[in-house]
Length: 71
Image (cartoon, rainbow, N blue to C red; front, side, top):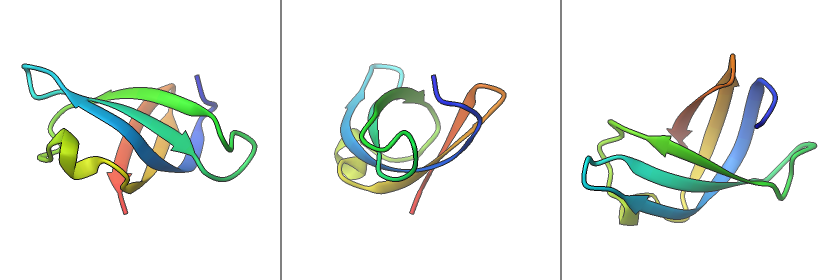
């Protein structure tokens, strides 16, 4: 679990399930957690697993809840 904050990341793996939830593996690319890989499930992104592979992203954690935006 990451501390609350904003993290620069890159999607290194993505898998869609039958409910259109994307299971993402993100590598943190800067700061004290650089190199860490975190797993996040995301719904309602409007993108496929293939579309997000390799994309840079911003991961915001607030109260332990992640929010992903793609750069």
